[in-house]
Length: 357
Ligand SMILES: [Zn+2]
Image 1: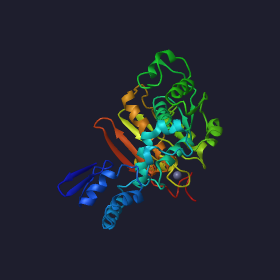
Image 2 (image 1 turned 180 degrees about the vertical axis):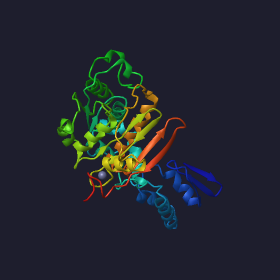
Image 3 (image 1 turned 90 degrees about the vertical axis):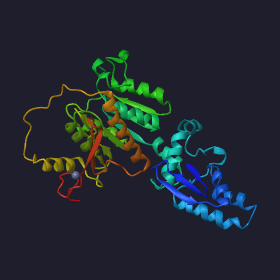
Image 4 (image 1 turned 180 degrees about the horizontal axis):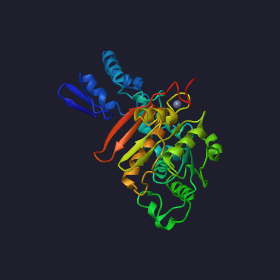
């Protein structure tokens, strides 16, 4: 946003709300309204400086300042029409607004390429395996399908129960007794007919059960919580090691939602680094289970939806090549005051999975 204060222009960043003041000459005041995203720098200089050669230095200087402040887009869109390299016209039309957002990521150098279209292409060519499509996984899969992830494998052997409907919003009363994987694939095909949705009705009892699915995937997201989040995180990370990036530990418990880690094998801290760090911090590294936690308490859809969507956001960041927020980092959301706390999880040289190398 740009506001005028007599001879000064105020640039207000929609990205982080920073406000910067610039002194503006008459030529700059003529230049700014021409920055509509349709012209290249060369075209702007040409159209302004036809009238007076003396303006060339002034206009170029202003454009250079704007570029240094990351206020100029790296890509001009003549006539407002995006080229459709690699994507169909239908895809360009569907994702036009978010491609604009991805362009802002490019212009702000949050990714290392210049065109927002490239981010959408990365999503379109990605395959993501979602293990468990209940309260968390159905939210994750819905957001990824809507955003344009090309292939989603939905793995779950559960059937829909009436007690799921308070928080699993993709399912309805008529679906009770049907496979969650099948119903979600049907629903998401309605949300995004361009997505390839693969339902897999299988029980995940050990890493081997999903080995073939992991092999096809660029990213695996563990969202199952039976028999426990800890057991499923172990299975997910074992199935993914040593080649496939995965997100584990996204869960919720009573009043706290948990986010992270995103594990890139051999690069970031792994699930075992997290376990060892947490156990060591709490002095629990020599304890053993004594009493199971009370699992009768559930959660609201308003709560699980927050965690599910933040995991989907992390997955999108990873796929489009933006810095990830949950690598080497474990975040807890306290639903009481709605506040976040975080813990840095460093890769441990003594880790029995990723250490020693
Ligand atoms: Zn490790």
